[in-house]
View 1: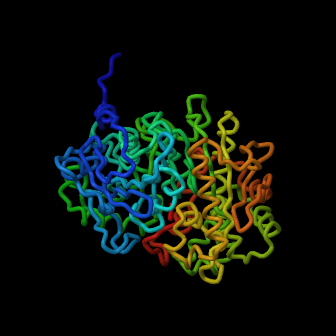
View 2: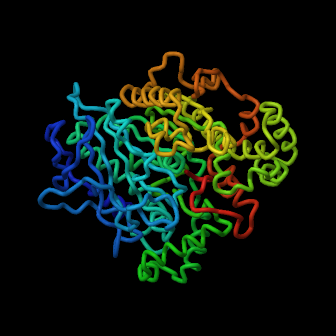
View 3: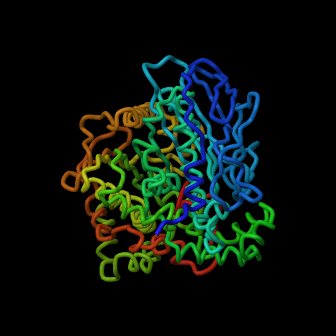
Length: 547
């Protein structure tokens, strides 16, 4: 049977034009992209270009559809300021002075002005925020310091919440993959990078895709999509894995609940609502039992033909080098969002833990964590179990899966503590960001600013950029991860390589495949398991799926 190409496939093939082939001028503030010329700014050895459209505004009839090709412009477009953040809760993380709008599909580029021997490695970052909030304009993600290490840094924005992940597949072919529009935005941004990297002095054949939290979940989902093959050559996953990719049944339930809250059923009715009305319905949905699992990538049969873990384990999966990191105390970030969790004893998590590993294993699991880290309070033991179940354990499963296929993969564990709240956060979710980007000063209370931290940031950046350039982190004692050695770099004041650190804790969740079948997304997050209705003290920035 000959099948007619779907609208999605046609869009994927025609989304952008041919790559820019002109040689880059490392000093010019005017750059010719495939859609038109832009003018950036210069600062301390860098050129910066912000708010560059990589796709057409996803508004009007384009709402809920795959990204369309960027509309060309004449003259020289100003690229001195960030574009609008994508639609999200108004009281969240968007910096002052940044608008929130549906018209938000933009990229930002930092590139060194110094002449280079050949094109530079390109590092493309996807921000976190639980697929409900976040913007590339957040100070944590400023690419200037990282670019000064000799790479071209690109940060991108993508549709969030119902604008990027609402399952409307029953509406027909144009909406079959509406539950993955945010993911398609990211793939479109990678195509834009491939077609325009050379104009900024970058190598379109040496692209490192990296992200943190929801950004790392996105990057791992992109690894699971054949549509993105060839658009990246290395991947860095910071606190995020395919474990948070949903299935059609879950996305359909979230979609039905959302449309009921919006009092609008179907594409036509939803398109008749204003962006603010749609966002208000999303805000209400986040306070129901769906919590942090309402929106995100989904196995839809097209963008993601199968669960990404299945593809990563198969011979047809990508073979690009991968660097995987987590933090030791991922879930203690919640203390900033819901202060009460600092006092919730580990017994509170028993039903959730029993659902994951079996009731007969709960006592042994708790005892293992208490013995491994005797300095932890009861509440901290509970949060350690939650953080490892959601982040460290699935990250190790990714590393194991790739290593078994012979794919080079390195594993790191940030044990660097945050000084905030007197150190109560431990090494929380997101602590790595300031060190990777060199943006410790963006939040000194959270990251700290002592000289050793600044020095450590430079060391982390050298590892990340060396990996981007060569496919290896460049530290000779940090060997690729295998199930025999489990070589892991503990990143801290004094970083050191350890084989199989915290082995007892690792073994607690070793039986879970994290393949979308067990555990399911709803089982993975205690917020959805423990609270049947609105849960206490939820603020706009969530950590179950991302900082």
